[in-house]
Amino acid sequence: MSGNDQDDPSSSSEKVSSKLFGNWRQAHTVGYLWDNTASGLILSTTTFLNLAILRLATVAAGCPGNPEDDDENCTKSVYGLKPESVLTAVATAGQLVGAFLTPFAGAICDYTSKRRIVGAISGWILALCTLIQAGLHAKTWFIMALLQIFAIASYVIHQAMVLSYLPGLSRLDDTGVLDDPDVRYRVNACSVITAFGANLSSYIFFGAIFVFSGIGIVNIVNLVQGVIGVVVSLIYFFIWHPDNGYKGAFIHIPPLKHIHPIKLIESCSGISIIALKEIRASYILLYFDFPDVGRFLCGYAIANAAASSFATLAVVFLSQYLNFDETKTLYVIAQVLIISLPAGAYGVKLMARFSPKKVFLNTVGVFAASTMLGFFVILPTARDLVFFFGFIWGSCFGIYYSANTAFYTQLVPKHAESFFMSLFYFASVILTWSPPAIFTLLNQFTNATRAVFLIIAVFFFHILSDYIYCFSF
Image (cartoon, rainbow, N blue to C red; front, side, top):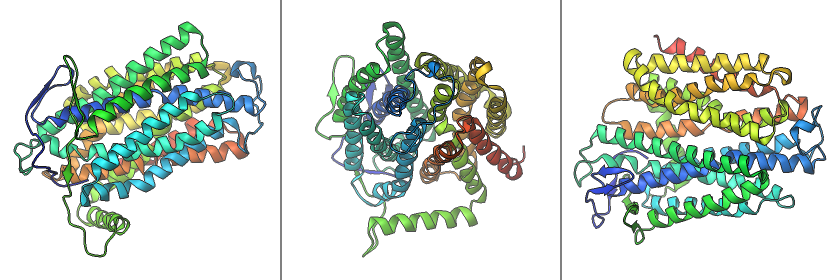
């Protein structure tokens, strides 16, 4: 996923104006932003689905269906796992498969012309999994949970395919040699905003239906997965097939272009060998030529593992340890999401005043301290404290995701951002399986549901100590 993309000469490079996404030099920039919108919609379904699977797994294990009816932690199992461990084991498996396949996805992007095919296939798998999960009920919950493994892994691979288009969106001419960094940053910022906006809007919309209609968590999942599955399928149909696309009075969805390979495959080398060689070459490059970038990526892999697993582990903690019902759990997650939006905007102002490095390191420090403090003070007897901590965590999330990329781009060499951003994405997914895996083991053998915050805090404190040692303020 590096270098300059070479487009199909027959494809159009005309400027495009979209009422939703503005004006862009490259027409398929709008398709890129639409795909990020679809990703945000998919992410909005995760909390609802996790809550429903947890509820059905709990009932199947013979525990009380309503967490507030459970005065003592239920230790019964289903399929050999405690109900909450089913949820985290699924997350572990999905993230582990996705992390394993990511280097091969990168090799496909760089050495073949199949990125659009793989992007389409991974997108359709993701959409199909979402649609099938609309059939969730008491007899199918375990199959739907297993299906989530494929959904998570396909999401990771799909994101790798989509991000490989980013370098070509900022080109200034048809050769792909001249590149405008400001355009690339603008595209990246817009993609984050569109994904987050779609995520938050969908979450609030379906959350309001759930709260005010009283239809139950399983029924709302049936609705959410069905509606989002259809919408995402339509988006993927238009943008991942060259002869499709859609242009209406208010909505324009151009297809993503065909991309030629940017590197030549050595004779007698398959994608697997190439992927392994790329990993080795990247390690040597970072170790000898760019050690600061290497240290950052090692720490970022650990930090993002903690941040990415927060939502799944929070659902388990709120439901199983604090005995929150689904409505209160949704309130806490919504609070974190809503607060992170203005916090992200404020993070930009903080970086302008103090530098991205200081903002990033201090945000990680606050995140680590607050999660460690939460481990000691958020107890079933003082569970409403979680709303106070939700404000802190939402602020940390918003600033964290604003500052991490900005700090990283200060470390990488000029005119090589495309290659190093591929390493950035790889670091962001390589360890995401580890916090839910650690929790699953602890929960199975010690009944330590409370350890959620301790796991996250340890991850953050570990990388904070490394960063303070490597990067002086």
